[in-house]
Image 1 (tube, one colour):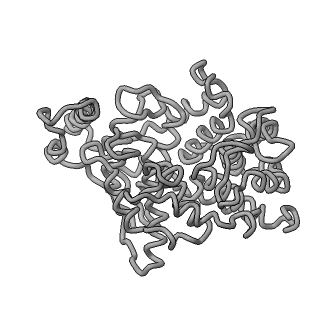
Image 2 (cartoon, one colour):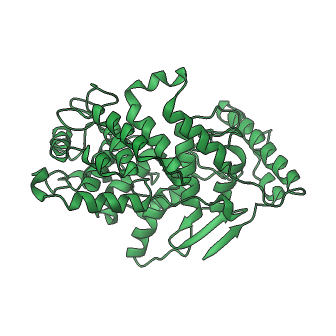
Image 3 (cartoon, helix red, strand yellow):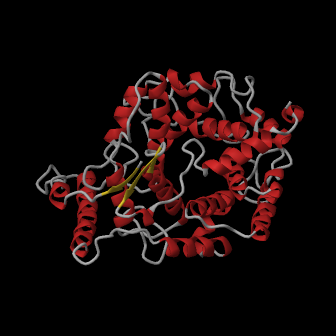
Length: 402
């Protein structure tokens, strides 16, 4: 089923404006400021509809150029991410794949060769060549290599050493440290399980007690915290839920409480998601919050509750991304007034894809020219590329990781 979604009525949106006489503190002042910027964007767009009924539209060519240029050159502002270079590859390659860009094999091989230099002799990947192996860049590097999809790229991953690295950061209570001797949080569990499942090295020994530890991170709010006893957070909620789904232990989660928490994080006026209670809207949560819904749908279906469509307002989310977060020269932003960057470009485009696709249904705002390729909600990689990687790694001898 294909559906073109219509814009919300501007007067209905206006009802969500925070009243200026509200009890003011820094939080409400910031919220009012963002609402004014967002509402101005909505008003400007609605005024333009008299001339062009096909608004809003995605600036596909500009985004392609911005992201493609970023593969070759990044400004000095990215120097602080020197220990996140596999992430930079992933944040660029993934949205390009959703936009339908096909890189030349020679270019793919150059990127694969670079990521190979980030792989540690002890297994896993560091943030750059010669850097200490860490679960976060390991997740990013594996995803990037899967997106490249060539035999050369997939062969970069040393599965035996990767498995040994994952074992070295596994903790007795079931959690995972981000690196040997490093901090423990729910990101580690998701990153470890994601790469292990993609590359076919997931074993019972590796995940012993992990589901139980993840469940201990679900808070009274319904979301998941980074560690037991902390505040629920959008990114951690996705990591916790996705890790449980990989383990086929999603039934252990309080899904109704999580669903309630997730829907409450979608902002009434903006249409985008906030990451925590009383925080501002942020386009990256278009995926971190939005991507959790398809995972929940599968769990609810197993319980005999079959959703007929998205359980969040997919049209409002697409409005926020397309109207408020696009830079006309390419790239996407956190919120109006912020600079474009590849991190928010990646997760805004990912969230837009999630909002547009529900099983075999397409719900696209304004025009099908805005449609993107779908993304796998478990890994945030295109489903066809996930299938290709799974087939490749599961065809290898099973003793590779034993």
